[in-house]
Length: 142
Image (cartoon, rainbow, N blue to C red; front, top):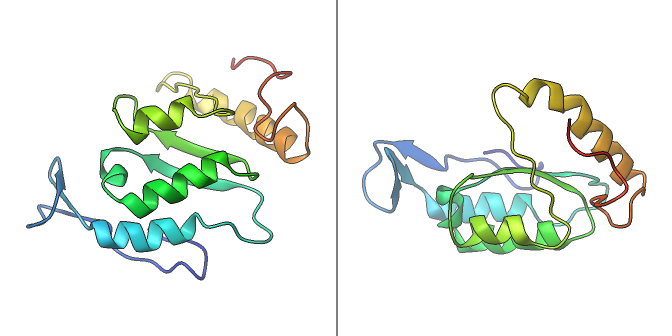
């Protein structure tokens, strides 16, 4: 994971890693995810879009990351992120937060949705729509 220049970088999981929590075949480096991931999501001057790739089982093991992601999703800067299709806890919570719009992508439609999502993000950044994420007043996903 790499964050803004001040956030640093590091290894968040190791295939076949020993010790610590596991997700599938990966050993999760919770401390690194908390330190790097949480710092990367902190508000910064000049940032007009936050990208979170992804909110999944691994990320939910890191309490500081979850707190930072929750703040980002509730903050003034638009967020483009991916979230696990299935999951409880913060995975489910993130999908229910006010202002969050979930668009399910499939292999068949993901390429044609790029232009639509880009248009939505530009409109939100320009201040269109009733809130910062532009809920309402926009066309439905194609």
